[in-house]
Image (cartoon, rainbow, N blue to C red):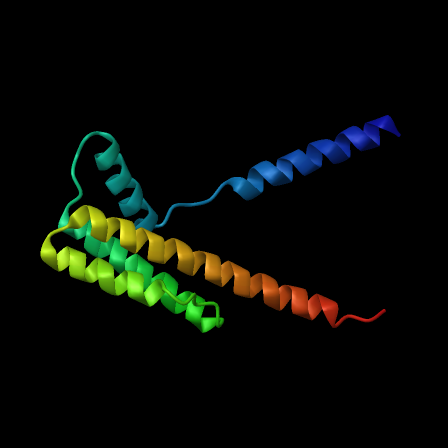
Length: 124
């Protein structure tokens, strides 16, 4: 019986490790490159900010597709675009990241609520 529990625990750990491994997309690669440049003392360039804004818009669209868009995401994107035009790249990047993160959270929240709602409809 003890062997069975050890095997089950080993299988569980293997699933967790496997589930945590993810492939990076080109967008993630660009984001990692921008973070790397910043951590090495480099500055943010306009192309990185434009990419961050595009990522935020894509995340916003995804969240909206499941009715999970949060209230201020659009405002953050507009402010990021204005800051980019003014040349304030740091502010633009921060706002774009904030919009993207809030959109990702909104999407996750909407999906969890759908899942929860469908589970609550189950009557044994």
